[in-house]
Amino acid sequence: MSPKGPPSLVPRHPTAQRLIDAAVRAMDAEGEAGLRVDAIVADAGVTIPVLYHHFGNREGLVQAAHVARLRQSLDQAITELEIALKAVHDRQGFLATIDVILDRVFHPNQDRHIRANVLGATYGRPDLQAEVAELQRESWNRVAVLFAEPQRRGWIRSDLDLPVFVGWMFGLLLSRLLMDIQEGFLETSAWNGYTRLAIYTVMCGDAEFPPGLASS
Image (cartoon, rainbow, N blue to C red; front, top):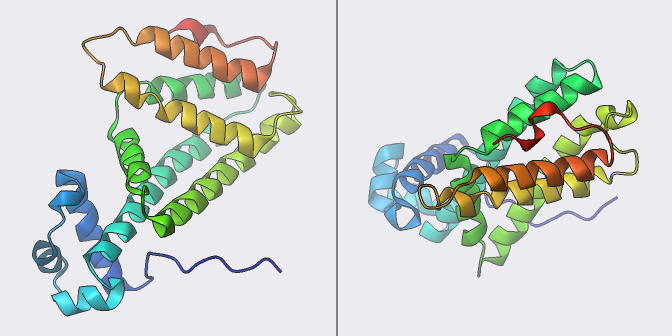
């Protein structure tokens, strides 16, 4: 039996969830500095002692909200991928689906900013860092499961370590944030093309790439 990990930073209780939801709304609107305890408890319809009961202090709520923001962002992305792949029946359809998803990712989006914000918030917070790392691993494994059938069918390389590949791909796509903030100053289509080339080269080796490979 594997040893138990540390307790979650996110309490499983309806009242705690209302506080987390209120904290996420505040952080999405104004960042971590915008999380004010009096406003949060008013939004959640509870009192300050209730917040302290579930989270210990404001910092506990902040960390729980960061975990919730990341989980929601990852869950949404993985659910969209799962739905898309369910409609795939051959290798051409699989590659075309991945290409469509990459096109969507290449446009600036709030989810990427949220993930980068949460990762930055782990600095100096070892408990948050550990929970975020575990959440990332779980997400990579979920996507690896989705890629297992395409790998079995020979649509992607048979020697690909799927969890490692998925983690690498997530990191590469997250780095698109560096180009997001250059919109209007640099032409980003070249970055998109390089990223497609890198992903398909690692995923497919020398196999034929989809027609949209060089597109932005």
